[in-house]
Length: 225
Length: 265
Image (tube, rainbow over all chains, first blue to last red):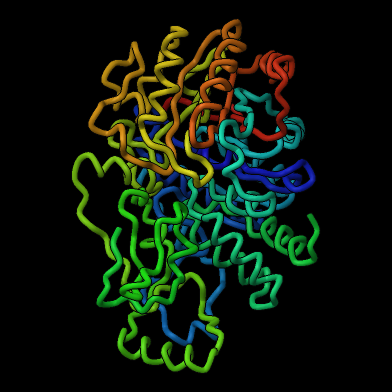
């Protein structure tokens, strides 16, 4: 789940971007972890996450391998939380994405009381995660800091493309596709909401934040840089 | 990955989807074609795109008529209309491409999905990174630039000279021919992957030298390097790494916070 560490963006852009994830530790508590992982997801659902997923099967928006041609005019875009929760079958990382700190604080407080015994991490702005810890009476155990990109940074895309693409740190959202969707939104060929659905389906562990993506696309539509 | 020329209708949807830019429409055949040397077997096209199962001849005919009239096509951009994208059987050494590029496949060496690392995420259980220690994750090829193993080896051999010890439970370490020198198995050096993480830890006192070395080597590579540094906090949740990084000239705003709720089962 280092795929969440290097999300690109300034503090304003990342202010309401939170991923809370649970991970079993191989050889220590991975045996019998599946029911706990499902419980984590069930608890998360109460706080209205904008995405939910497991590292093996994907998030609440998934591609279809038997698409009906009518989908080009009317395509299902309802989130499927049940499939994610019921689909956890092995000790993997599960994640919930939120777009407000109140939900994160409520969820973390409930996790603390539930005492699942799994490692729980918040991937977000460091200060915002700390706020959450203070609110819920937890002291941070460990912190990992993202120092950003080095080397051939001239090969990277522009800011908005990078902000969209790095929301899947596994690299499943290409620069070209992010750029294409920005152009389509600007040309009026797709709405930001539709573009967010396309992106979300490519994120194979459900950590893409469609709320933040919509804001980025709205900003791009009006030429704000 | 390959694209079945009998099914492909050259709609071009997969071209933008490929993180490596390895797919193009071949002007000679008018079919999508994959540059096998650049393809990292990430399965983004195969798994991420939805599929229809339309008749290729029918779709080509419709497209030809539309093209003649200069009609603008606006199909769903994440769909392969004829399910033309096809898996191929991978053998050594090409199989390492998928192991490092497809996040759904767990690494054999660690059993972990993604890039196969637990890092500081389970530090509340393993205590791998202690107080006054810094855990490094040096990641290559991210975001969506890609990297070959010989480029990773440039970094690992340079870091090995500083006397650092590579994390044993890490997929890159498992492919090293010699963990003391940082040399990677020669038969995979030219394999291209989406990204990989090299992991190690060191005492706080060595952090400036390590960061300096990482910056120097990164400048010489034809890819991008993303660096994460972690540490264990004290009972109040504070640590000294943050001020050390600031004193080394780094600015940062984002990170991962382990809440300390894990315990051995």
